[in-house]
Length: 312
Image 1: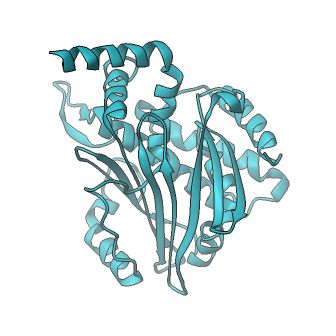
Image 2: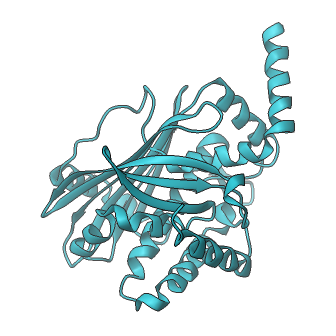
């Protein structure tokens, strides 16, 4: 009984003292990759393995709800959450490799996401570090956002395959072991097959915070996995923590996709093109991803991009 009352009091304190950190905690959940015991196994990093996955997912890539060759999956364990996307993109492997197998470009990718407030790449003895501030869905001082430090590693670079990861040891509210993973291999006809994954591990405080979010402001939000049909024939979508993971997985994947799409745009026009494309892409899945109006998103991101040009 004392444990139950302690959990209730903790939840009350989290709501009273840390509502903004609760929100940021749920946002940063979309910036990690395989972190806990259940998802610790490394994937088979090779072009052959990734192409085998492309063959395996052939039907799902051709026939799905996304109206593009894309497969999304998520998983939950007692300690971890993970989301991943496999997708065919209409960009040559050389262009994808140059864009994403390069730490200097990742901040321009990440800043497109609604909740990334700032990103800066720097180098130290251990390699490249991305300092990423995550916050609310409006422009805010960086002091009010959560800063996470991600170590960047280029794992493999071959003529027909590359793999990159970003990882952070700690996050808010007892979350830890964040890791972003992306790998790619060329396909026929100038296309590329991408695999993007993330996950994170959490403790007791993080679990309580998540439960509080899902019982209040997150109770009506859904992900993409179809769990059944409503009486009117419309799909029922997954909710809960997997819904959180799936929404963030898609937001980050779309940031990658539109960054690639705008690479041929003249540099002075590129940012505006990327912002317009990201918003349009998320609105294709408005049931899951709509959060702000177009003008509000564009104004916020223009300010954040300008702030990002200043080293901090």
